[in-house]
Amino acid sequence: MDSSIVTCLCSKHASYLTFSFFDLGHFSRFECVCILDLEHLTTAQLGSRALAIIKQQTAIDSVCFPETLSRMVIVNAPRFFSLSWKLIKGWIDQRTANKIEIISSKSAWKKRLLELVDEDQLPSDYGGKSENTNVSLMKEAPGGMSRQHTELVTIRKHASHTFDVAAGEKVSISVYVTSTEGFTFELRDAKVKHGEPLFKSVNIVHKGTAKDHPTRSTITPEGQFIEGPCSVKVRVDSKSGMMQSDKTLLVFSVFPTSN
Image 1 (tube, rainbow, N blue to C red):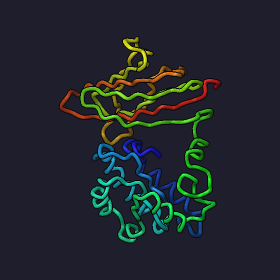
Image 2: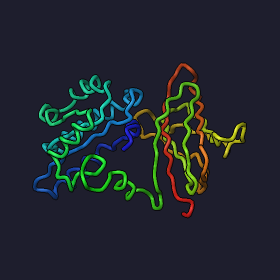
Image 3: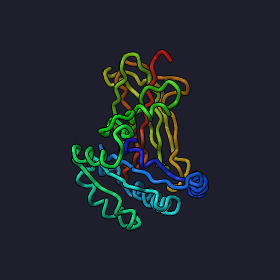
Image 4: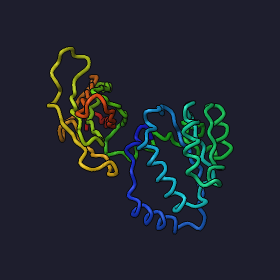
């Protein structure tokens, strides 16, 4: 999972607890080895909201999954994460914290993972011979989708992000927002100077409170796609003013044009 998506993950705690106890009830013994890949993680993504979610999730895990963690290996951790880890570690049961290893060196974590997991069970992108995790994730994607990209954008007044769509591809774009002031989204082809917007601008406002799930909306018209080859530029204008910084998550879902 792209690390940027963590700020948009929330749990309905009561239903999560019910499901977790029911699911684990089918096992007489259950332990797992977890790989947490922090590649591309930035300081902007570890804001107060993301840390609050991590804190809640560790509390849930301690109740729902006691002693089920065999080992967790955190890989590709950026240097600044050591400071965040000191805070997060305080929320975790000491026995659980002792099972967590942070390894930044690629050669070192590949060697360690092969000590913990059989080579034929470890995904190929982590040094094993099993199916690549990107291939596994795409099998669970909506029918026909060939790839998906997420981008967390921080906006003070306005910001933009450009995404390349290749020939033979088409893309739909969804957004997740938590700003009650709202944003205006505009789509253009970045390679066409002074070109007209691809679609009419869309205004989106978060419909809940800070504790609620982010509001999801599609900024490409329902049932329509942007076909490649092109570079789609998403411009986001905040209605909160320059004194406040907001975030939105952009999700680009790519399909072959034959679909």
